[in-house]
Image (cartoon, rainbow, N blue to C red; front, top):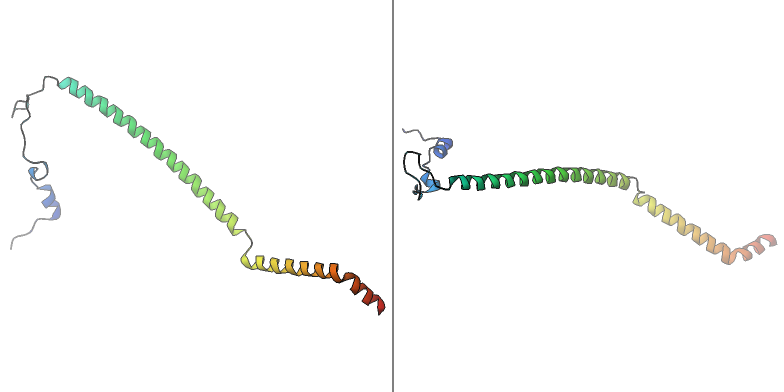
Length: 127
């Protein structure tokens, strides 16, 4: 019985052409010995170095933005915690209903006294 290679072995032993395609000779380079160069190689490297410089600057800005975002998230978390604390201290629905009933009873009693107060006082004096 032949042992099957592991998934890792399958991935690491893949032929590069499966991903990159066959090697295509580049015009201006000598093949095979690694000694070939382009005539304008230094200019091309200078362009690449400049691009890397810009990439580093962009990454620095991104890091700064991430740091600021973390600070903002921390502030938001604090604000949410304070809001939850404030909400927890608000009166309950039961308290609100009781207060409303008490207020309605007070207004009713006050209305009765205003409208029928003098008549009530006369009745009480008559007895």
